[in-house]
Length: 312
Image (cartoon, rainbow, N blue to C red; front, side, top):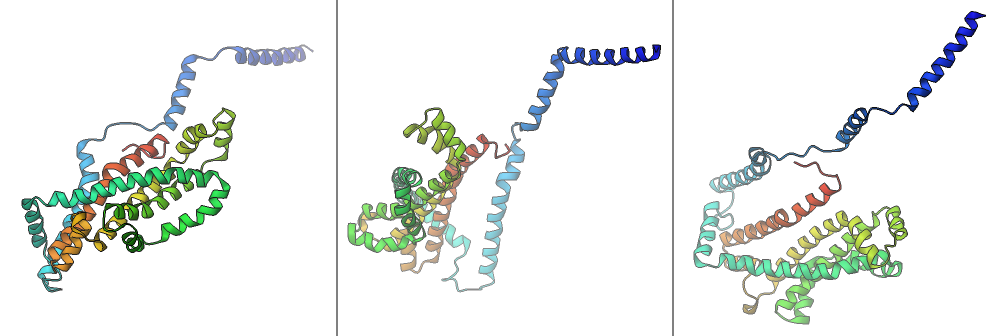
């Protein structure tokens, strides 16, 4: 009997000890350690990358690739795989660069095309963004205009040059018309694609908080569609640049000046392969520079702000 009472007392004591332990406040140091551990799992260690590592990872690979191309190019010239008038040497192209620089025309070639391309792209941005919002948010407009935008995006930009010349003549307006017809569909479709990927819960939560109309577009739709919209902007710039080059190659006039596309056509007319290679090199250089200076930093910033890119 005594043992039975002792056992009952023991179970009661254990129950009391458990309730006491549960009611006892936990040590704040233990909670802080637990929170720190959980934060460490979700956070990314941010530290400045050393300059040497940046050079090795960012600069050395493209420089090595360019050097390799030049070496292979020079080897092909020495092997005489093609006549000199068909395959100019790197030194001949460099001589063409030097001559254009000394004559003061090199920067003029670049600025003539870059100024047109950037202005045309900005106009396309101002048109394509509200058009993309309208197509994505209004069902009737999407059913009516959506297939047309997709068709225009797949249409080669060079196809718009002849009608633009007939409609507007040989002037800058014709150049901008070709740029817009090439870039607006890409920008609008990129924004539509980004909006389609927004979770419906975000839109419902925004409406619950009072975000409707323009507020919804500014605070919910555009931030949510930003990755897809940015991809559309990159593609829109690519179409703008390609459209402009096609227009400059086909349409030539003293009033239009000499851009990179016209420089390429002049090299063909003069049977000057160094000038042709110079124009190709400058067109490629501008495209790479715009991507590295504008679109790549924007893309990294957007992805990093959403936790989709490790800081490096």
